[in-house]
Length: 289
View 1 (cartoon, rainbow, N blue to C red):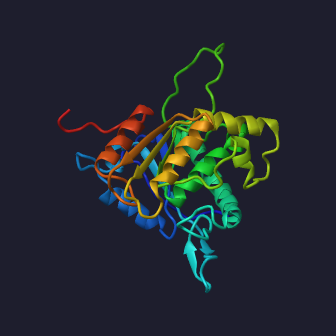
View 2: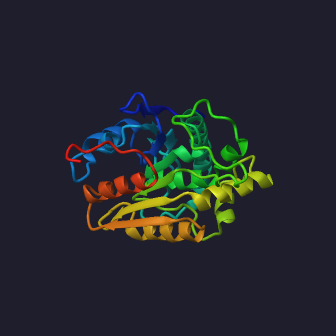
View 3: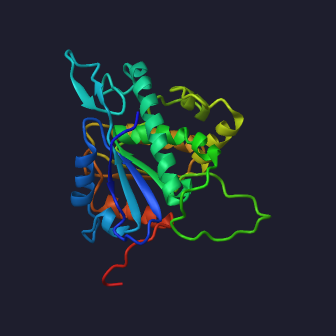
């Protein structure tokens, strides 16, 4: 199913160098997520991420309305997959797989489309908060089919540097993964075992499996978690960190003393800015620079 999307175009209309896809949390909407990220989450210079990175296209997919299995009536929420017990993510874990499978397939299509628009998978960032971050992690594990297509992009956002044809091609990867107040559904297995939990079709071929592994191991990750998070406890975030490192990923872990179930501000936003700059994303010039 095609998900609805709210898109914020690059502030610099002449250049589109990267795309960041941001998945909202359970019960939230793409509209409120966009408003919160643009209006309330500021760095120490009182600037939003959109202000700092004017060449980035921001895409906010909207999760489908899904039946809340733990409810005693026909309550539905916008959620990427159902959770039986928010205090224990492993409780009723088998209920999570069907919705997660559908959402990952939908997010993967969005990644494919955005990669074609911006000029390559390595110019796309995948991000999310809470359940959206959990979905983003699993989507990352299944991007091999996107890379294996090796389809020519519709356009190149900026000229590419010509490389020596005798050199091996760079590894397939995303520009980055950013997760906030997040956890890993179905932890404790190997990379292949974790991937097999949701069993997406079309991943049995060796080239796809190899691309899956290559993308995971070469995509840098930023994880941010607040110690006073009352919804997703920090222990879940630390477990996610350890699991991703066990998969071979380079993970930047940032734990903040306060901020609740959200991005820490301003220090946490400053850290995100530094992470994105390190990935080569052009930043707007400060007035005093």
